[in-house]
Image 1 (spheres, rainbow, N blue to C red):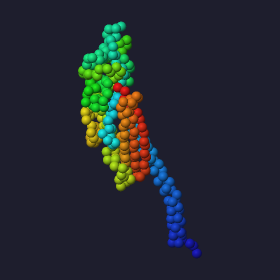
Image 2: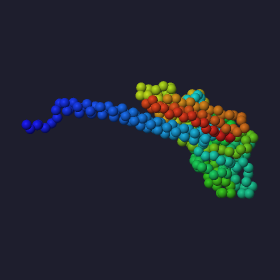
Image 3: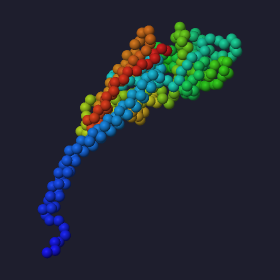
Image 4: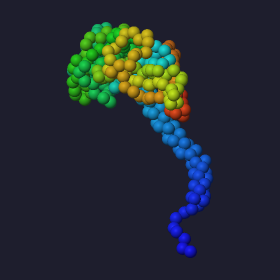
Length: 282
């Protein structure tokens, strides 16, 4: 008798059982592998983010104007990163008789720069000289505005800067200055919402911000609020802590900042603890 094509019910049930066994076996072996791959990818992304955040902060700390770092609490710190710096002429140039030098007994209004500048200042930028106390650069006691920039003959210096009158304390003889871009001014790094807890997705609740371009604030008693001057540096911040030791009065005049960040995404965490130094010699 001729047999009709197709599968019997028993054959279909057997095939379904076999497929179920294979699927279960594959799930046991492949699902953990896929989960591990995704976990490694999340940790890599978090590592890139925390590395970039720390690089940004350490770059600004190392470029900070001497004694400009202040920290209202462990969740934030403020500083004034310099775009360039160098030395000015502090005595008359009798050879050319065309120099402009700083008289320590008179307010500074114009001076010749003796060293090459990494970034040329522009009108409206700021000059900081002899910032001995942290609040001075913010209040304006050691800061002035550039009103004119001139190229000068090589035998006289590199650049001539005219600034609004600035008084320099008698006895200061380092003849050093720093320039700060007008568009940047002071910089605040602060964590918002980093409460050491995780949300329902297993992510950190906090965000690390960098704020700049705001007016200099003579007093900073608290971390700033999030506004249009703040840009995101890192997300998914579970915890952050900043600790600054100015070491005022020591022989090296070097400040030390410790940066601690913990980023968490879907219960995968990356933590970093970095220390960096700031030159506080005015």
